[in-house]
Structures are given as structure tokens and as C-alpha cells.
Image 1 (cartoon, helix red, strand yellow):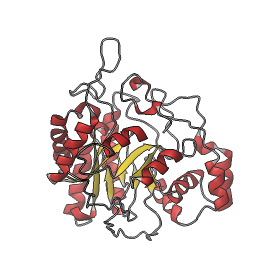
Image 2 (spheres, helix red, strand yellow):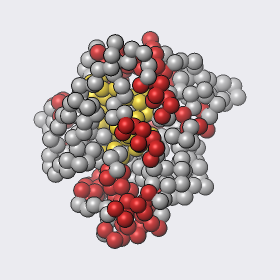
Image 3 (cartoon, one colour):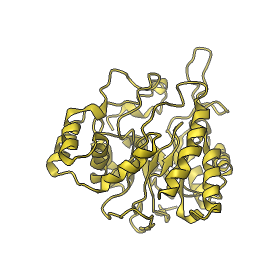
Image 4 (cartoon, helix red, strand yellow):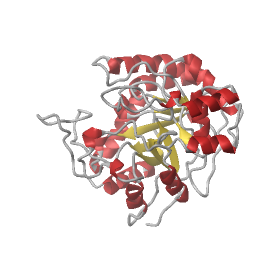
Length: 367
């Protein structure tokens, strides 16, 4: 069957993601298809037509991988900050099975619908398929589990979290007696076909991928019988890893690049190379921020927006949720953009060493 553009194309990347914590983002109209562009009005923010979307940051003091109690912290943070974000105008809630708090997010969505703050159609909800459910027969059950937890009939976007399959089961990271991940052998093109069926069944309005390199994207795009191409590819992207080649590739195929770790990273030793520099302490970013009377974080966010990237960041402070509204109050000059482009060092904070021997490990390619 020939490729059919996905019809539900307004993506608000992203109001609240819980990666063991809460993320907040927006809401600017974005077309993910060459033939349809849907606009969603989200007051009280002024809409700037040239912006694809904006990630509103919470600054993070913890991570769900830091202690056995952190999933409980993630649930608590979700219940505390998700209602606040919705109340101040955010509408895209980006979740995942791996973040372990979709039930709490579902409770909040339902409560905000019940009290009249929003309607279901106001909310743009994303979830992600985890690595242990990449077998085609496991895809729909995984999505249905997320829908049950979220108390929703459909998600607006469902994303394949990584191209690497792990052994099915309840453990997020199944390991053998030597502490090595137990891989599964799955052709992610078959996984993609199962995602297409979920879209056709009305369980997901749009489907996309995350952490795919350009060769892996090409395998889906060139797959015989492709029905829907990915609307987005969510990858690590920031001034130290600006992904310019991958961005150009995605743009050429009308795929939206979504940047996680847009402000660098948390300094979690289990996940991040502690020898890498702290992005927001970079003197070039600091000088540009001082010139515009903004923070380095706002400059890093604005940089991505101006290059057509949907940008994400992390945190858990209401003050910073509001602070990032200021990203609409200024524009970086061509000289600023060139200077920030020059910061690229191909530094990947999230190197995913555990999966480096997986045949589908995505980060061995240049882009």
C-alpha cells in the first residue's frame, strides 16, 4: 500500500513529560504532514507562527535512577506539577511507560477535565513504546496498558522509544547474571507495522520514533508497503550536540526533530559522563544571555526554536515553568546563532553504554 500522510498533524511538543520527573512544553501549531496543518489555540500565550514548539523547563534536583524510592518521587512530582502546568495554559502532556507515572498523569488529566479547566480535545497526549514490547504482537497491548493508565481512549502521538529490542517482561532493563542487558531479536520495521495498525484502530492519532539514526529512519521510509512515515524523531540535541546533519535529513523527509536534553543533562553518574562540561556554564551562552538580559537556559531553548527544532528540558520548579515564557520575548541574531552553532562538540551526555553491543545500537553512526 502506498504511503498515506498522517492526518492528525498538530503536535504540541510538549507540555508535561515525566522522565521520572515532569517536563513542560508547548503548544505552537506545527504541521507534521505536507498536506495538513492543524492549529490549536492555547491561551494565554501569544502564538508566533514561525515557532514549531517550545519546551518549558523544570530544573531537576533528582532522577528516577538515583534511588529505589525515585519512582515514588516521580509519581509525587507528577501529581504536584502537572495540574499547575495545565492551569497556566500548557496542553501537551508527553508520557512514556518507562517513566512509571502514567497513572498519576491520567488522574490529573481526568481531574482537570472534570473541573472544567480543559476538554479532552484540548489535551495533546503522547506516550512511548518501551524496548521490552517491540515484538509486533506486544505493541497494541503495551499501548492499551498506557491508555488504561492514562484513562484515555487514544493518545495523540505514540513513539517507539528506541530501535533496540530487549527481552519481553516486566523489568524495564532485563539483565543476565553478569549484569548485561538481555537483548531480543526484533525487526523494528515489523514493530512499525504494528504501530500503523494502532493508528488505523484509532488508538493513536500519529506515530513516531525516538533515538533513531538516519540509516534506521531510512529503513522505515524505504520499507515496502509503508503506510505512515514517522512524524517525528526525538533525539538528544543541544548546542554541544546540535545534530545538524540529522536535522537536515529529517527536514528533507518532513520529519520533525524533537530535542531532549535541550539544556544539557542532569549530572547523574549512572547515566551521564561526569567529565563532560556543563552546558549552561558555557561562556558563549552566558555572554549571549547577558546581552539579551535572559538566562543561558532561555538562549539554549531559543536557539533550537529558531532552527526549527522542538526542544525539551527538565525540572521541578514552578518559577522556571513561567520563566521560560520569556523565550518568546526576544530573538537571537544571525551572529548569535552562528556563535552557538560553533559550540558543537558532538558531546553526547546520554551515551547508553549498556546497549552499545546491541545490533541496533543507534549511536555508532555519525548521525
